[in-house]
Image: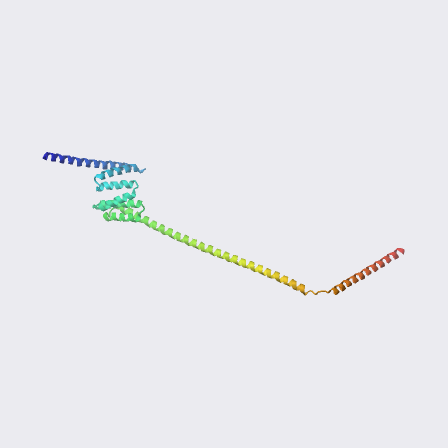
Length: 265
């Protein structure tokens, strides 16, 4: 019975040792793929980073709390541009790590992941936490300054755009008011023109009416000739015509007589 128990303990020990070797095998192979992908500086070999991620996850299935393996997984995620998941992984590590240097590295990588997501405020805070745990970390200092500079530029650009929008709106409102004023002036001019036309038309009608009245008055003022007076006037004209005719005949006769005398002589 004792022997059986002893053998059982031996088999259990061998099983644990075999599993540990298998986990380390995953990690070693994953690290090799990660290093190979890093060597290709001309291209980002996301395929190898992805394979490394798969191997890290297999190892973590057995030891999910291993800080170093989780750190490697976070790096593999970052290299595949999976910045959201990598920032979450590094934040988890930063909170769990008790060693200040490891905590600082986790915050540093977390800051990088957040910056790639354009979350400048969060990345700045992450870099500050990295420096709180390791004040001598030059890379954290550099990235903190860089993130703060980007934030300042972004705020200035935002203010510039805001001022531009404000100016554009002001110009737009000014043009709108000017157009409104022009329309009012145009309407006023049109109204005045209509009034002038109506006035001219009214004055013309008034003048025509006045002329008509004057004509009527003139006609009314002309003296009326009676029938008797008209006949006398006609008779006088006829008498004058007869007298004139007689004078012409007499002058003609005299001229004829002179012509005869001249001929006889």
